[in-house]
Amino acid sequence: MSDVLVGKGITKTFDDGRQSLPVLQGIDLTITAGQRVCVFGRSGSGKSTLLHILAGLLDADAGEVWVGDTNLTECSSKERALLRNRALGFVYQFHHLLPEFTALENVAMPLLIRGDSTKSARSKARELLREIELDERMEHLPKQLSGGERLRVAVARAVVGDPQVVLADEPTGSLDADSASRVMELIQSVSETRGTAFVIVSHDEGSSVYAHRTVRLSEGHLVGDV
Ligand SMILES: Nc1ncnc2c1ncn2[C@@H]1O[C@H](COP(=O)(O)OP(=O)(O)OP(=O)(O)O)[C@@H](O)[C@H]1O
Ligand SMILES: [Mg+2]
Image 1 (cartoon, rainbow, N blue to C red):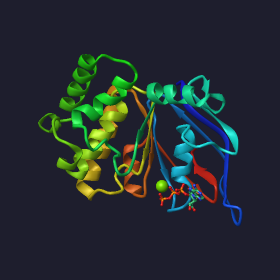
Image 2 (image 1 turned 30 degrees about the horizontal axis):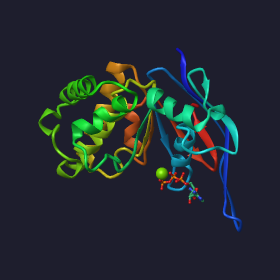
Image 3 (image 1 turned 135 degrees about the horizontal axis):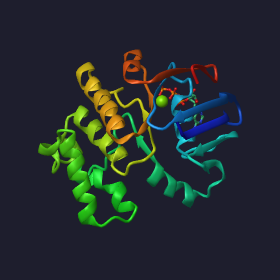
Image 4 (image 1 turned 180 degrees about the horizontal axis):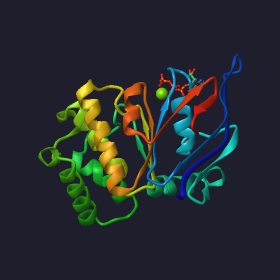
């Protein structure tokens, strides 16, 4: 199975001049095509920091991130943005949908950014929203959607461009148990139908039933089957 995302020796310390906080101390992580991996860890253990480094949104102090056969660490910010648009998806805890755009427009956005025609982007977004049973909500603004619906739209936006891997930072953290299960079921089904790998940060150990493997971030190290 090919590796879609590899972190090697990722190290990160936050230093505000007064205090030095070592958060990641040499993280190795390999995600293969289509694999779903849950990352657990207590609040403040560095889960978001790790995800941001894997997405090239934050620089590590040391180590490398490979997306397929591209070394993200060595890319310019322009190359990273291009790679993020084509090969990576990101789902945030609080969805981060664009408030002034409809669900359909939000899902079409990554395709428009990569240069697809409006017609083709909207048609692909419409098809995906239909597939995930949000056809009745396409023309709604984020504020007109429930929390669970917003997260499902955010998952659709992350996968619409068929990235190899999606990084999801506590996608269910703000939801009740039923909505959280629905979002995790959606992640599982889109991952299976499209072959998309997912790295899912979660507080809820129950999420592991949706994953192929789980790892735990503790004291700057990943423990488990990495
Ligand atoms: N930009 C920053 N500057 C200084 N310290 C930071 C910065 N970002 C994060 N930290 C610190 O690094 C540690 C890890 O933060 P991070 O957000 O990665 O944790 P987390 O595991 O995602 O927590 P949570 O589960 O609460 O989201 C925390 O102690 C946090 O205060
Ligand atoms: Mg976090």
